[in-house]
Length: 606
Image (tube, rainbow, N blue to C red; front, side, top):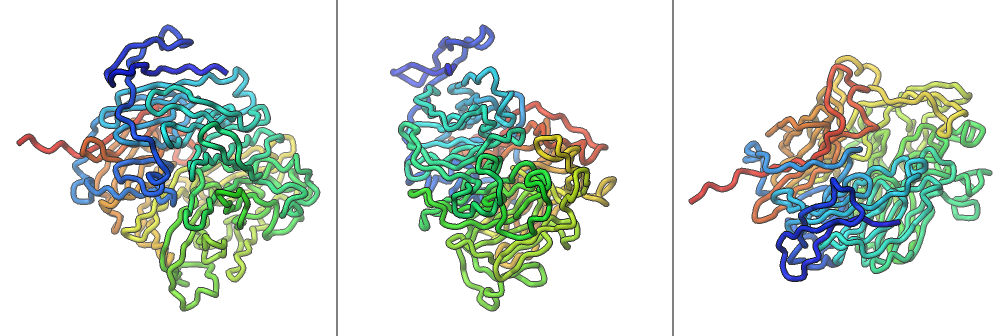
């Protein structure tokens, strides 16, 4: 497949040169670019302990805490933030998180279009475009979005819409090599990005809900040439450990089960990477298995809706925990697995399910914390996968929740059988759905709090064996009782040691925006109604608010370049999450993708 790129060929200086990009249309043929200089290769040590000024991976660090140690912007001066630059992006879903390294921002527009920008101005340094197969959209229905990039050595690593891994020179934008990871005609594509650990590129697939061929996997590749080092299928095959949990379903039909969300988190001391896995297809079990009577507890259809812990060197699955067995409703658990070292002392007045072995201990543990698409907060021991505590957050009871109970001693999850379709045509309202989607939370080691963006959103689903998904009609809606005037968005600050809610911000406008916590005791978050805010991390007070040009659905980053701290927010919206589905009285543009960057005013001249 031909690559089309624009890159500087100068070997003399970093000055701008004008070049002609072969294969581009006349309207695109001339672009001013310049080579990124000086450039120091990114090392394993840099990724393990990144410079606070940079943002080198998804959510900044291997623990996926989404926390910046920068404090130039803080709760005392955040109200002075001002716009310093904006840059238009390509059309399509806006779900991107930029990388920033040594004053250069690397972004992934949709449809495999990457750019390097001057992080202080947004001016372009290089531009890379990859031509897609003509029939791509016929097969890879979710291949029009990219959330994350990876950087290592001299290269940017990108997962393409047609299921390739591409290494692009971070200095020039030239493609160094590419390797096919799967056949996109099976419905396999990428929406998540790669991560780099010990010279390996770790990748997860996005398997289309419109395909009954796509068998998903996580794999590791050599950073030098993309050759595969190991592969772990995310649906256990008939002859694999756990394979019997699928009953008589043939291995080839154990599809979807997709690690489509955030790249894995990584504990270098344990040598384990933690990935979240999605749902089986078709969605209702009566369509998927031909019967509804397959139980309500784990294990079932491994490794769907699970956390899997995989050895980075071996590719062996060391443990798993299934958050939602025998899913009937497409309630993905692909969100970030955040790694935290904290004293575990859950408050029984706040936490519904507590492992009895924790009673009276209050000891520091290495934990993994996650929440799925339907809600539900889980805290696990990340060395063993042991269940420590859980809560049906944001719900007070389990009446409409997909989880009816958890055995606190074993961690065994029981699903709500009252919401399971017994016959084709059965319709249910399931809460929640898109409570927490691809957007991320953040954790501040300074406050010990997790900052969780939540939607009061539910799924209206009818079992239908005439559709590939097994469900139609199927749509999201506000939680019953919240349709007309209820607050549909919450940002909750939860003490992860005790499980206690410390503060909550509620409002009508729903969200698909991520939180970002900083050492300045500030938490940033935006909503679908174009409002972007800074909260006091300790109290939840709104310290600053501005109105942007479109729905806020990208991942914000903060960094320092040229001695100044910046905050960049990608806005534009998502085609699969619409404001009018939830609050019809509100209006905000969908699209108009743009990077919006803020900073404090320059110091006055002497």
